[in-house]
Length: 114
Length: 113
Image (cartoon, rainbow over all chains, first blue to last red; front, top):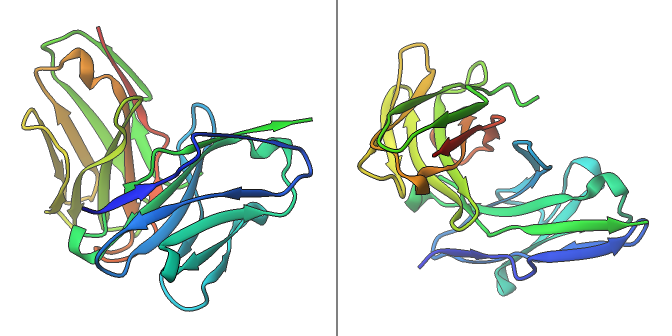
């Protein structure tokens, strides 16, 4: 069955420290991969996407993600976290055989400490 | 601002009632997706419309229905509401029916009492 797993429910990092949020997927077809961020009471904002090509993709707000086919992973990274990055982060996968509707992971809640 | 609008922002109603949620996609986008976000189920895809036609269905209950109108706005109708239908309902739009980024609206928070 198709699935998206975000193993970490909560992550706490110090401001200025680096960040890596994990995402693993299980899909038969070639997936299209996304990271979204949701601030409290807000909608979802697209951080970055991977469709094909270069496996390291750059997004907004200084985020990047790397697609690793052999590990079925699409981890999100940021070299230096700011307090304003505190939010809920969702990995999502779309595929042709599911009409490109997004299948979301459960999310990782990021807390940034001073 | 994603360019996707949803009304109303909040909706409080009673069990057994029927409500309609409205979504206007970004200018030029032909696809509309509906998602439900709840604490226990997370974010789940409900249904997709493309240029007025139903394109894909997800975990949508039979009590729920949707449509997309000629001006491309979409409505999600929820009937015979139950307490468990309380959730945040998001609409997203994309330019086509294939692989494309989806832009999300601010959501409608539904509370069923």
